[in-house]
Structure formats: C-alpha cells, structure tokens
Image (cartoon, rainbow, N blue to C red):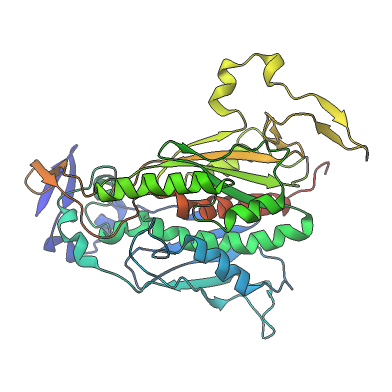
Length: 397
C-alpha cells in the first residue's frame, strides 16, 4: 500500500518487501546516511536497533597500543540497557567483539579496528503498527519520507539510541589514548526533570570528582540531588510519561592551540558529534545563552601567568575555547536532552496508508529518561573529538 505525505510516496506494508532494483530507480534514489565522524581519527558506525548486530570501524589509531579491555567493558556498562530502574527493561550484554585491527599480541597493528556488538534482547513485534502510525517525536515519519517507506522501523532502526553503544566503544578507547597526554574527560547529570545537581565551577572540577560522579546512578556530584532525580523519573514512569534533562561535560588538561576556525573550531567539532546522539536538542559552551544577558566586563576572563609561566585565565566563562581554538583552560559543554518520545500516554498521529488521523499509545520497552545513560555517551563523543584534534597538526606548525 502506498501513502502520500507532502507529495512524497511512502510504501507501507508488504509491498515494500519486493521492489525491482532497476537502473532508473537507482539513479532516482541514491540516498545514503552519514555515519562517519572525524578527520585524523575516523569513526564509522553501522547497524540498526534490531539487526543482528551493531558496531563500528575506527581508522587512524596509532599502532602498538594495548588497550585495557576490562576498562572498555566497564565504561560501556554505564550506558548498557536494563541495568537500572531508570532505564529500559531491554537487556543487552554490550560486550564488543574485535573483528580486526589487532596483531597476535593484542596490540593495534595499523589496520582499521572493527568491533561488533551483537543484539540479543529483541521484540520486533512491538513495532508492527508503527510503519503505518508514526510515533510523535520520533524519526518514523521523516525516515519514511526520505527512504520511501523502506526504512527499518524496528526499535527506531538506525535512529535508535542503541547506536550510541559503538560510539561509547570508540570513546572508551579514546579516553585511554588521552590519559598519557594528561587529558581527563568526564560528565554528570546537571539536571533531570528540573531537579538540579550541585553546580561546581570548572576551575574546581578534578579528575577525582568526575570519577566519583561516574560511580553513581545517575552520575551526579551530590547524592541527594541524584535521589531527587530518581524520584522524578519514577513519577513520570508510573504516569506512562517521560522526562528530559541536561548533561554537563568537562575536559581537563586539554592543551591550548587546537581547533581550525571558522567551521572546524573546537565547538563546531564537538557540536557535530554531540548532535549525532539521538534526543539531543541543544548544546551550549560556558555561559551559553546566559552570556547574552551579561556585559563584556562580566563575561570576559582576565589573563594571567601562573607560577610556571603558562598563560591562564582567572575565570572560565569562555569554557576553554576562544575563536574556536582551545585556550588550555577546562572545556565545558552542556547538552540538553528532550524527554523520551516513546510514552504510554495516548497521542495523536496519522495513518500513512489511509491519510487520516489516528490515536496511538506506544508500547514496548523504553527509557523514562534518557539522561542517566546519556552521560557516558556525551563523554565518549567529547573524548573522540578531542583525541581526533590531538592527532592533527601541532599548534604553531
């Protein structure tokens, strides 16, 4: 059956299973997705939520590196589903299988490193109706228009948060590559459902504080704030609804002089990576939108030379980036996540096949709040971008 939306033909139902692959069709529909990130260190992510597996290929890793795979697995478990009442009931092992890129001693060998994460706990029947009834707030409708109705609807297909698992794998490797350079990346849930974590000045943030936050669920500086957040998420879950929040991420020890204005500055690169995370609706650096209400005398950070002669700033409202170039001060980024769109509250949608209104209650297993599992994903995206930058041209060359 074929439905129409905005003048675009959308194939709905069994007819979409067998369409002749003519040369004319190929010329008319050369459509692809951009699952690639990075310039010096290149990441390609593949898979769908209910495909046999998901994974990634990483090009540009230095040869001769031995990674601590237990630490990689530990990092990925912070994102894995089904580990906490705040997350979806779907359970996945999320243990990556290394397919290529290592020599017989387990060291990187210069070849692209390929990793596979198998999908196991799948219930595709939960999505049978959604090919015809797009979920509000999801990519169901827009993907159907772009791909002519041949998109994979199960679990959101390639638009699912499931695809952040291979991003976390890549980020876990980059975190280990950044350590010898003296760079620490970490994040916390700054707010969930309006409940605020303790605000800490970026000049007071330490690697130890970030490690302490990572050990909590959700990752917070103040345990009492975390309990308030959990209660707010539980209230939404019991109502069949969902909530959003903000993740605040820090990079400590990143050196000055990196970033290429005007379109490849540090903010540009970080924003590109973070907006690849499903449900992200906003990114801010430093004071963000609050800077619009400040005077220059309030927002500017005074320079001084520390005891070692390094140029520093007494405050860090610029969040470690000036003119798109790192200043050597802590990089601070806030990422806003919308409420999970799959909810048990009745919503208005349309039947793409019949072209008329419908009511929909989304079934299946979904996070009542994305933020707790998104914290390590934001860390991974930041770590990958900063690692990519460090592998580029040295400042002054």
